[in-house]
Every structure is written in C-alpha cells, then in structure tokens.
Image (cartoon, helix red, strand yellow):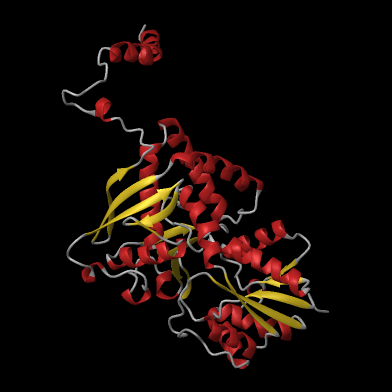
Length: 400
C-alpha cells in the first residue's frame, strides 16, 4: 500500500532530492511525483534542473521564481531583527525553508496532491523547518521524508541514483553538501567533517581569499528606510539588485566567511561553513544605525528579542504565534530606523566608519567636551547620589 498517491517533492537537483524521485515510486509505491524547484537567486540555470527531474521520473517539474519574495518577505525582516544564530550564523539557508514549505503546500493544493516530500536526512535542521512549517500551513497534508528512513550513506544514495540513470553531481571521494541562494551559501560534509582541517579555498564561491583581495579599501554608503536596506552609495535599488551588488562588493574584499561549530536542533554539533557577504554587512550596518536612532532601553530590550527571533528562524517556527508576536514588536522599533551607514571594506573586514539619520538621537552639544558643551555637570552629583543610594545602604548594613 502506497503512502500517498500524488506527491509534491521539494527538488534541488542534488543527490538526495534526485534519488527521492525513483525511491518514492519504486520503494513506496507513489504513483505520481511532482517536483518543485525554487529560484531563490542561487544563480543556477534551472531549466537543466527541470529536465533532470523529468529524466529521473517526475511526472511534472515545476520551477518557481520567488527571489523577490525571498529577499523582501524573509531576508529583510531578519535584517530588521538583527538575526544571528549563536551570534555568528546569519541564517541565509534557514530563511529559505519556510518559503519553500509554503510553495510546496500551495502546489499540493493546486495539483491535488495528498502529500509533500523533501530530501532532508534525520540528522539535519531542515527536516524540522520543513515539517513544522508544513504542519502550520496545512496540518492535513502528509509529509514524506525518504532520506530520513532509507538508511543510505551519501555513497549509497549516489549508487542508488545511478541505477536509475541519475548522474552523480559530486565526486564520491569528496561529497560536499552545498546549499545556495542569493543571501548566501552553506557548505558541509567531506573533509570539512574534521573540525581541525582548514577549509580548502576551492569550496568558496562568493568571497575572495584575503591574499587575492584589493590592497586599497573601498567605502560603501548603505541607506535604510524603516530598517530595510534601500540604497547603495545614494542609488535607490531594487532589493534583489541591492543584495546582488553588495555581495559582489563585499565578496571582492574577502568579507562574509563563517567557519563554526554549530549546535543543531537534534542535539549534535556540526561543522558548518557559510558565505554571506551582503547579509553580514547589512546586519552590521543595520545594528549600528539602530544605536543612533533608538533609545537605550529599546535598543537593550530588543537585543533579547533578537536572540529569540534567531532561534525561531533556526528552529523552524516561522509560522508560529511567537514569530507573529515578535514581528509586531520588531516592526514598531523600526519606525525611526532610517538613515545612512558608511562601511569600509578591506581585507576581510567591514568596518563601520560613519552614520547619519534625520532621526538621530545623538546630540552634539550634549556629547561634546568643547566650550559648546550644554550638559549640566552639576546635575550629575544628585543623580549619582540617588542612583547609588541602594548600593550605599546595602554596604552600610553589611559592614556593621
């Protein structure tokens, strides 16, 4: 008895999702597999991927161009929230999963499928992100995950696919697992599983090695409107264009590499390599602009919310009540976060060297130490007395 009659499969053209097509049909008796590839600005030509799915046995091969939606509705909110998982990973891959899940659910409804499927293994985070997002969007749909049950090693999966004429996209001796979209790349597996081995230069695509970067710094002015990136060097750009151009600018200076031991949802540690030049620069610039335009208490309280927000994204809770509540808070804080941040790009570093805003809370005549100083120094004595009164009383009592 088949688990489902018609299935919509999230398809990337990689090893696992390619093998899923014959596996669903041959091993689980699925009658019709519809593949769905999402164009998230990864730069790949998707027509060959579409043809590959059909050759592997898909009845229908769909391609959805959702790059605009990905940047505006998923990437930009994460920037507004300064979302960094474990204060390092800018969530470039994780942000794509709820969007792909929505595409799967929509395609299932459109094509009358009774299940959706993905190629995630039982050790990764993406299985959680897909499953939970799909449950939230349509709890009546079945979710199939062949790679979670088939027990194949990567070499086994490649061999199984070759039985059905699916060519291996990677060398069996060095099977890197790579995911890419406009916001970044993630690279794992192969020799990278040894955390002591330096990543070979060949794995990087979006960023130059420091030795190959320019010997002169480059400056870029990044404009924000209500916390959303809007311009580069004074030119207002479409969101996709802005990210693309900043990827090139920052990547040329070797900016955007992350090599980390990451705590996965399933409880294991994983060595992950990320490239996210534009996203990391934008997060850094946005946080700096907030320091200019938000009050101290809002800034400090928001830091707590940012950690929660990054956890929500990482753990697959994009379509949760908590995410909705956090969004309301984040959006309120962004009403005054408009202005320009100047960033110096040089030898792997993106250094903030200037910022300005019409909503600036920086007051020169209060901050200055020159003769223009308008701060009432005499008021400080009374303030300090009141501020420290509790500590003074405690000290007197404990020293009796």
